Every structure is written in structure tokens, then in C-alpha cells.
Image (tube, rainbow, N blue to C red; front, side, top):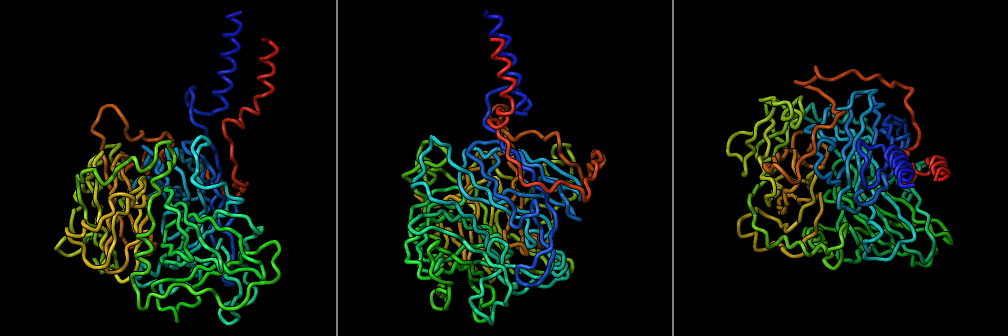
Length: 599
């Protein structure tokens, strides 16, 4: 009998391992699978037909809905006519910068080819988004949401909402991204956007002069008395937006993976690349529909009036359409500190856990000794070697043909230099591929000093960081006295106001090459980025994952690349497929039944 049970167990184990579709048979966190086909569609969100980048023929793309610690496998098919990479903004991808989807760590996916990303959302929750990272492609779309849910055993610091709504807001140009790219290459500024989209749609016709007839707008349908979670992402090119819902409070509960101190806002500034979660209760009398507004900030409002997105909040018992003027946004003509003070009011909720049972506040970041300090200063665009460029510390990053970590894996020299300065250079600006030599398991302080005239936002791939301070003026050593060393918000994207500084603390516990960049697409495209290199000197313990078997090769290693059959125009356009280990086991039930017979 024991031998019989042993044989049955072996069969069951083999079936389970086959179902998991992983390289070894062991107890693992669940797997989830998506197919994303990135292609062009023709759309006219502002009434002007243009080429839009869609995911599975959807614009915006599908939501990747996963849970803490799940393994995520995303097969991306490039049906565009140019190279493609997808990056997962805010997903920390513990130990796998090979999956980051930026030029420093990945060769682009050629047109007609597919490539499979594989990463784990390790110890993470929250609201994020993905997008194409090359050549201003995000200006044409290609983005979608990522929702990372708590595991069932971890409590959430608010009641379960009656619905979950993703809202993508962002400035929009009627010109194709290729035309925008050429303008930047020719030394021109992109100028004022043509409008603001909400979920890929133009504004509701609140004003017959500003908004032409026939524009398709977004409607959010709700039930009176219920509470909904709005996950709002600024996926635009370069415009900060003020978000508000007419007559409704926005209860902020989470931003980019951190549960926040719960506070009501009548409106909130959301800068390029940032994501926020609000709870909104439908507590109005529904005498009519209500406006949802995203209006441009820190610009001449009389000239930028058209750069306003308007959607409609529709109660099921609404008595009429929204009408009249839009609810007023903030006016900073006499108070430039309004937005900055609002940003400082966003703090970490220390009374709750997130992805782990222990409270977030148990990590007392303010007591950790800083091991290295970098001041990253940007300036208005400059001309270097006859080209208009942007810089950090006087250096304008130019991606080498060979990704940095691929060069290291094959011991290729001269691809980059490990000499990025800790302070701005005194000499003339220059172009190159200079990398920050960061200390693994160090604790870094970074001060972003914005000497430009526009708001800039900065993002670090693979990490969350504590936004410990921000203020107008030049940063000095004395500014450390203003730092919040107790409950500063932890996030992956922060704004830096013009003529101001923002300071962050980051724990460098993720080995590999990681991108530090401006999220403003024009600034990023012109060179305002740098990479951090973190080598793990320990023989044992956590380390960067090895080069994946499906790695693409380019640049100095192009000769290693094997041909892939182009999928051409016959590529699958099916909706995203989600297959977990549990659902795969359902397909094995007939086999398990046969096993039971022999038992």
C-alpha cells in the first residue's frame, strides 16, 4: 500500500509541476500570465485622427491585476514598426533589473518579435502603471494599470470599496510621437499640448467654444451611497495636473505602494508619472451629473484653458447632465507654496502594515546613517555639440548600443564609465554614459535641485524612497534640519518644483543597474537620466538574478542574437489571458480523478 501511495504521490506531483509551468518542482508563489500585443490603432480623442499605440487593441491597455508576491509573466508582442520596450513603473522587481524594460538593462524588442518578461511583485502592494519607454512612445499611448492587492491575511486600513476605478489622465498632442520626437531632435520645444485625456478620451463638452462637438468623453457610472476607490495615474508628457471631482471629497489612502495618513482633499496636484488612490463616497443628491476635472498647473491659465480634461460622474439616479462652469482649481498667482505644502502633507500611515504583517513604521529610516550623498542638479536645456540637450550635474546621458548589465555579463569594456559626480560639474556640459557607483546595502541621500523653470518629476526604477523634504531655493547643509525623519511618504516618483529642491532617502538593497530619470518625456528623451550600479560583494545572500535565458542581444553582442520568426500582421490580438496555478489545476481534474480510481 505504501508503494502504491508513493506512486500516486509521484503522479500528482508531476501533474502539479507541469501545471505550474516552472523550471523546478517546489512550493512557489502563484504565477499569473498575460499576453500583450502592442500595435497601432487609429483614433481621434480630441477630434483629430492620429496613430495611437494600443494594447490588445485597447487604449488605454488592460489592467494587470495581481497580488503581493505573485510571479508575473508577460509576453509582449511588438506589432509596431519600430523597436519597443515596456517598463513597469513602480514595480520593484526584486533582484531582476533584467526585466526593467529600459535601454540600460534591455535590448529593444524588434518589430514583429515578442519577448517575455518575468518578475515578482515581492513584498509590494498598491497602484502603478506600465508604458513603452522608448522614443516618446508613451505620448501615443501604450500604457495601462498595475494593481497589486494585499494577500488575504494582511488587513487593509479601510473597508472594502464598492468598486475599483482606474483613471488615466495626461496631456495629449494631436501630432504623432514620431513628429514630436523630430521636433526635439531639431532643437525645438514641444509647445502647449492640444488637450488632456481621461482614459484615452477627450473632454466632456462643458464649453461649446473650447470643446468641439462629437468628442467622445469618459463617463464613470456609480450608485448613490456607495464608496469607490479611484486609482488616478498621470501618464502624460510633461504637464502637472490638478485632479478634482465636483462637490466630492477625495480621501487619500495610498500612493505608489504606501498607505498614507487618510486625509480629505478637495483637489490634488498629480505630477507626471505619479499615481494616487482615493476613496470617494457618492453622498450627493444627484440633481445632475458631476464634473471630473484634470486641469493644467503652473502655466498661464488664460492661454492653457484648452488643456483641461473633463469626464462625467454619473449617479444611477441622476436627474440631468452636468452643466455650468467647472469647479475652480487652485490659484497660485499669489501663493506658490500651495502645491508644495500639499505635497508635504502626504505622509506614511505608520499604524498599518502593507505587504507584510509588521507595521511600516517599524522601519525607522530616520535613525539610519547616510552612507553617500548625491546632489542631482538640472538646468534648462543647453546646446552640446550642436544638439539641444538636458543634463544632470552637467552630464547628458546617451544610451550606449549595448545595455549596461549585458556589457558587464560579457565583460565588455568601454561601454560606460563609473564616474558620475556626486555634485554638479564646474566645466562645460557633455554627453556620455556616466554611471553612479553606488554601495550595495548603503543608505543614500539624493537631493534633486531643479534650476529649470518647469516642474520636473523624478523616478527611480527598482526602488521606493522616502521623500524627506522639499522647499524653494538652493539646498544647503542646513536644509537637513527641515527633513521629516519619522513619517515621510515612501514612493517611487517625486516632484521638484522650479527653483526648488526635493530630498529623498533610499535604502540600496536591490543589486543591479537601476534607472534614475526625469518622468517628463521631453526632458528624459533629451538626456536627463542616469543609472546606479549596485554590485553585491557577498558570496551568499540576496543578489541580482542571472541573465535570463531569453535575453535579447544588441550592440557589441549583436552577433549572439538568434533570429526570431517575425509574427507580422497575423499576430494574435486576443484579450489578455490570466492563468494562475490554481486555474491550471482545474484542467487537471480529470487526471486527478483517474489517480483517485487507482487509490
